[in-house]
Image (cartoon, rainbow, N blue to C red; front, side, top):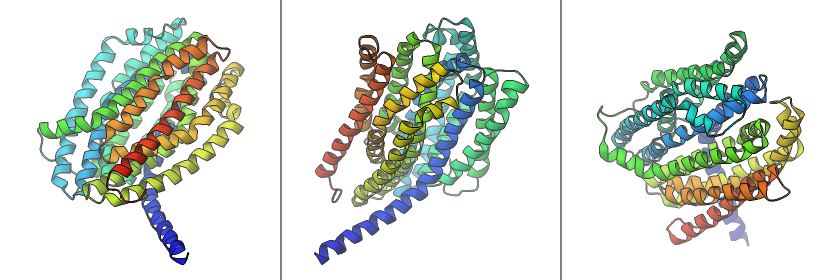
Amino acid sequence: MLKFITGLLRRERKYSEVGKKLLKLAFPIIGSFLLHMTYNLTDMIWVGYLGSGAVAAVGSAGFFLHLGWAMASIVTVGANIKVAHSVGAEDLNAAGRYSTAGLWGIGGIAILFTSVFLAIPEQFIGFFQMKDVQVNEMAVSYLIISSFGIIISFVNLLFISIFNAHGKTKISFKASVIGTLVNIVLDPLLIFTFKLGVEGAAIATILGRACSLGYFYFVYHKFDEIYFKGFLPYVAKLKSLFEVGMPAAVQRISFSVIYIFLARIIADWGPNAIAVQKIGVQIESITFMIVGGIMQAVTIMVGHSYGAKNLTEVPDIYKAGLRLSLAVGSVTTLIFLILPKTLFSIFVPEAESILMGKDYLMILAASQLFMCLEMISAGVFNGLGKTKISATVSVIFTSLRLPGAYFLGFYTVLSLNGVWWSITGSSILKGIVLYFLLRTYFKNNTFGKF
């Protein structure tokens, strides 16, 4: 018995040490994610004062911008994982070559999306078939202006991936602080003082991210271990980035496309329903951003362990990350159940939208813990370079949201709430399946005890 207790205490100390290291990496990432959420919430709050139509316009354009960011993850996810592997193996030259390859890749994707969005913005917004002409016009204007900031946003994402892979997560956080503060100051000035409306919100976001990128460029010269090696793209390295990043990108792209079609279904309930879904996603991102920071830290630590060929640490990293994320998920679940109307009333004044939002949050509360389970399991797979596993699970079950939303929304008494239940149900399934896949993977490979 004494031997058992001693062993248990030793394992707890080990988990505690891993947890502290994880938190040290995760806190700045969480801070950066929350600041990114603040970016979006700031826009939603100020745009919300213009009415639900303006929120629907920004939300509609935002779906396509998110599609672009999802495509960028081909490079950013690949760079994060391959640079982390190189750092773990203490091969900084390889990390530098991956960084240079990533810069070429991200630049090409940015040019592609900027060109397409500027060429046919009306066709993208017209997909939603919104009946309000003014809302359509605002959405087109927001998409056009935002397109000019795509290259800035994408390069920002690449710098974040590279610095985080080196363990320099505090730098990414400071860059986010600068960008968010600029955005918070400029939003009311451009939207109301200069009477630019939703166009002002788009301009404020671009300027804020430009300041973040400026900070990255300024500080990157101060780190000898972080550099872009060479000028020309390393084709083999770029191919490697695409191989690792493509599954994650397909996952994110499919997620964005699915949500575009889901928004088309939701549009049948009017602009208020679109606004509720847009705002609800931002509120739910409280959990997503915090757990996403822990997930990124798990990916980095697992990546370093993989590069150093020290795989016995991986289960401990997973358990520490899971404990932290489930604690966060428990808190946000309670908040969504207890304060749904209060949260929504911050963003929109209409009683109908607030009631819709209450149902949205209370239904999604059921999936928060399972989302935590999914994300931390995916973080481990990503750190090992096995991005196909988590991406496949996500694509399959997220795709089920469309037929589920259509059937539950139009053919049951649940109506719009059926759409919310389709989202919750798929999240629950993803968490369960990915958890058991990871357990099986641990058992079939040399990772020590799970």
